[in-house]
Image 1 (spheres, rainbow, N blue to C red):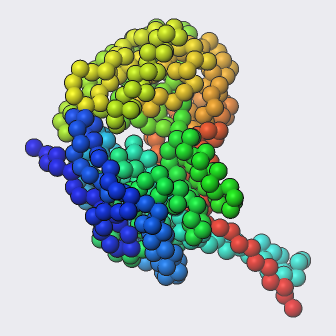
Image 2: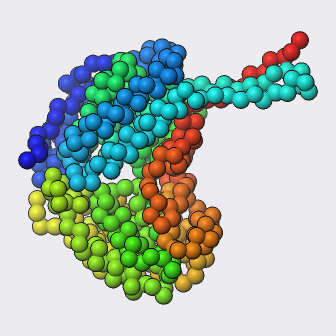
Image 3: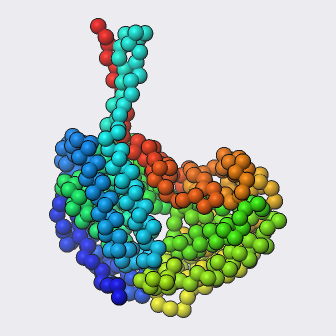
Amino acid sequence: MTDRTPPPVHLRLNGEKLPEGSGGFFDHVDPVTGTVNARIPLADKDDVDRAVGAAHTAYDSWRRTPPAIRRGMLMKLADLIDANADEFARRGALDNGMPMSLAAGGIGISAEWTRYYAGWADKIAGEVTGQPLQDSELGYTLRQPYGVIGIVITWNGPLISLAMKVPAALAAGNTVVVKPSEMTPFAPELFMDLVEEAGIPPGVVNILPGTAEAGHQLVTHDLVKKVSFTGGPVTATRILEACAPSMKPVVLELGGKSANIVLEDADLATACQHAAFMSVGLMTGQGCAFPTRLLVQESVYDQVLDGVLATAASIAPGDPFDPATLTGPVVNEAAVERIMGMIERAQADGARLLHGGRRMEREGFFIEPTVFADVDPASELAQTEVFGPVLAITKFRTDDEAIEIANSTKYGLSGYIQTRDLTRATRIAAELETGEVLINGAMNLAVHRPFGGIGISGVGKEGGRAGIEEFLRVKSVGMGLV
């Protein structure tokens, strides 16, 4: 039987493990039982100041560390993530109810993101820009790190969020101060253990859960030269406002209301399974890039409804420690109340409830996988991110109508297309107003592809070459030839 005892959590600051901070404590609630199972120390402004100071001191030596040495440390960190997969899976279940049966995929992705950016550490180069014979000068560019990066991550995927940000920042030569969510502190604690085991020096990485004041202090601190944030648009707006006076640059990976377009010539069996599991099954729908709007061509609409309903009905929320469980609880009571409110309003707005729609009669924060059909594209359910196990299905006639509906929200993170006609798929992909498009089940969060949205889905990119360029400043140098 898997141990359900939460591990101790500390503020991780300049190589120290502090059992308490100046921000008091947070009562961590087990989403399976709804009861408090741990007290989490919180940083406040003074702790953030110390962490930023430590990162600033460590920056000069870290940026001068030979790139091959940085690469080797990050490669070791990736190996350690793989080697600790079972413990990360256990902590994910403790953090937010992520089923252990599905955790391996996310842990493997996290290791691959770390390896990918480790590989960039010794490949950062400028370019020659001048033409000596014509301009009488030699021009070139330098790509240089910013300094201290402030990182704020949310609760739904703490390990993958860390892996999408920290390795790229370190490979580029920056140091980091991370504020993880106090609701999911257990995986970040293990990640920091492995950072130290990989040989990364004290002060280069600092991780401390904290109060809202601690987050404000981090993003506004004069020694923090850039901010990378994963979360929601409301908090992102506050970060932009806080950074505006100093013109501090930001990367914002925010929410989504991604459309999944099923065309009449798609492999419908596969498309239905994908549509249901990726919206109301995986992570209990608590993912920013999930396809939570399903747009179905009229000629196959009824067939797709039947297929989606069959898959959704087979998904039974349960104990995340049970190997048979594929979906667990939502994160807390506030999430239950928010999601159930949206479900009730969707029914009042005229959407047809096909499946679910109720809070489960058991302890903890469990909601039935919920599927609505005949959803008005202008309704709240079609326009607002639920961040829970709720799928909205809408009918369309033509490709142009599907594109119009898909582009009708303020979000622009991901888009999905299901069709056997790749010429048709590429035409539609070009018209979708999103940061990425995934066709016929292409993998989410593949590290070689830039990931990041437009509109209220965010600013900047993580993944691919663009992901490391977010942590580098370009300096141009001109040299007169005399």
